[in-house]
Figure 1 (cartoon, rainbow, N blue to C red):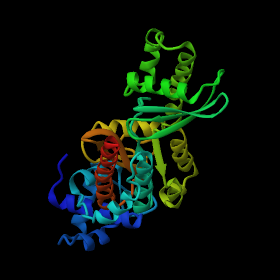
Figure 2: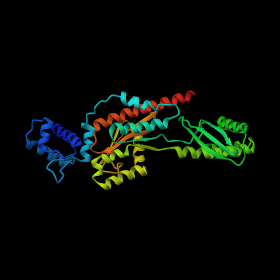
Figure 3: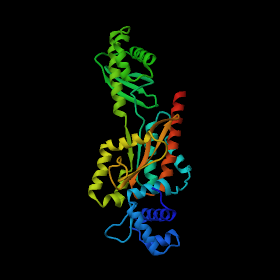
Figure 4: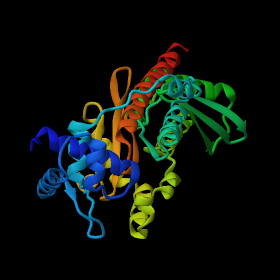
Length: 347
């Protein structure tokens, strides 16, 4: 539904004022802030039309109006003027964790940065792990106690303690690790499990048992350490009146953080979209609360989209500031993870 220019200006002015103040906006304030040379009666008529179309609403406690989810949607889609921001401060912060073999730290740092820069909650949907490995090692700790070291394709290093029935010599452990690395590197542990029975007949039975134990433990280790959603700054939302005035809203909010199912669904869907996505409560069925909005952007590793990051806050958030922060952080996270992966490939 298209709006004539005067209605667009008034709606834009109303939303910006409401975001800044959190109070219903009256016609007199709109007249002053919009700089339209219109009579109060004309402004009231236009606002009545906007209300009839569902873009604004009149709280029964005030003569002023507030934007509806539909009004917020028109604002962010067609009326919003995004404020440019410098990448330098974000980039320098993110690069503190750009280290080979530590993609999870980079991801966690990105979530913390989003929270710190916006004073809302930052969230990152991490790349999905396929329980694969590029290299394993066995380290003998003591009799029948072995440390399994797993290096994953994204550079993560995971450890698992194995308690074995037999005592293996360092030479036997080296033989078993060499066999697995030579024949199975790059495969998932599930794929390896299907091939073990036939392909390990040529290996001594004692080592076969060790390798079967290692494959099972490796699969469990990767699954246990995979953190699907990284959330930072949830407590910031305790300072947002839009949530805290209603105890039921607060319960819903933190239930979402604890269960993560709805949040993961939203982030997964946004990872299949292009560029910035804005989900507004009351407008999007993916957002569980009317007063909540989520601004997301996908990120890549070596030009392949592997996850999504975003900011969770009130519908009454400063979108013109949040959008560039999310956009730049997604781009910098992509660069950092790709750089970490490429450095890891050269080792």
